[in-house]
Image (cartoon, rainbow, N blue to C red; front, side, top):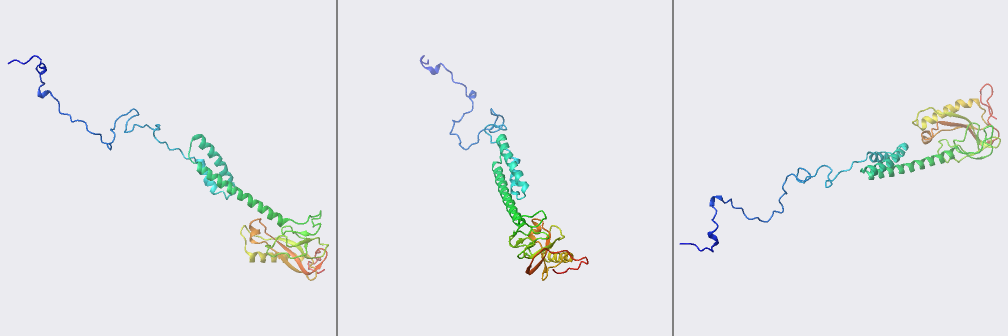
Length: 278
C-alpha cells in the first residue's frame, strides 16, 4: 500500500539506535557554595592567579629601623646624650618613612616625645644646679688681697681661710646658704676660718661619723700654726652627703668661734708652734 506524497516522515529515515549518544540530563541550578574551578588564568596558575605584588594582593610595608631606635633611645633619655641622639633619629625616621613608604611613624613620634621630655628635664635640672651653685658660692666682692671688701651674706662655698663672720657656721652644711654674715676681719666678729682641709675619699660618701672625725683630726693639726683668740674654741664645718656627691665638695672649714666678739684676724703662732691667745 503506498504512502501519501505529502507525509514528511516518509522523506527522512530514522537514525539507527546504536548511533545515538548517551542521554545528557538537563542542567540544574548552580551550587552557590561550590568552589570555583582551579586552573590556569590570565595571571598565571592558581585558584586566583595572583602573581607576587599583583595589584589585588596586599603588600606589608617594611618597619623603619630608625623609628625603633629613636623610641628605645628616647625611653633611655634620662642619660643626657641619649635624648639628643633620639631626637636626631626621630627626624631621620620621619624623612625615611616618607621617602620609602615604611612603617613606624608612631614609633618615631614616641621617640620624639620622649627625647623632648628628657631634654626639658635636663635643662630644668641644670638651671636648678646653677642657681644652687650660685647661692652657695655667692658673697661680698673680694679685694686684691683676697679678703671681703664689705659685709654681706655668703654661701658656704664662698668661705676660705682668713674669712670672718658674725654668726654661726653650720657643722653639717645643710642650712640655708645665706644663714651667716661675712664681715671684714677688722670689724667685730665671732667666727674666723683659719684653715680649709681636704677630706680624703672616693666618690662614695664615707659617712657622717667618718667625715667628722677626719675633719676634727685635720683641723687640730692645722691649729698649731695659729693664735687662738681669747675665749674662742675650735669648730669645723664638713660636707654633707649631697655636697660630697653632687658638686664634689670634699673640703672642711676649720674655724675659731667665741661668744664674745673680737677684732682683727688670727695671727701666726709663735716660733715654737705653741698656740697663744690674743
